[in-house]
Picture 1 (tube, one colour):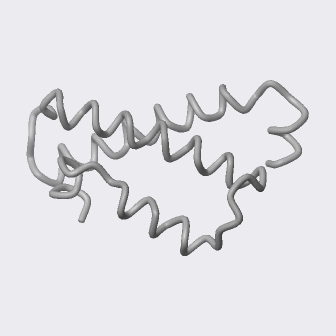
Picture 2 (cartoon, rainbow, N blue to C red):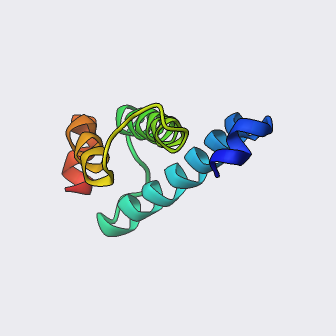
Picture 3 (cartoon, rainbow, N blue to C red):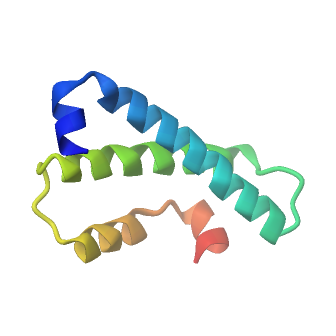
Length: 90
């Protein structure tokens, strides 16, 4: 992965694609689990922001920009989750 990110122009495409897929999957999970027809705009935008920023940070971590253990990175994702998402994902 690191070699791919460093030697191609695929990093931004990867982040965009994975964030979109993750957003769709998490949104679908929330809608199904809580039997909702759609997410309110605030929750939808918080989910989008969280998905994009998470994938960007993961890619930076893969590239060695953040010297963290995996469990430390997971902890950061937990504490940085937007409040509107916590009621659905915790």
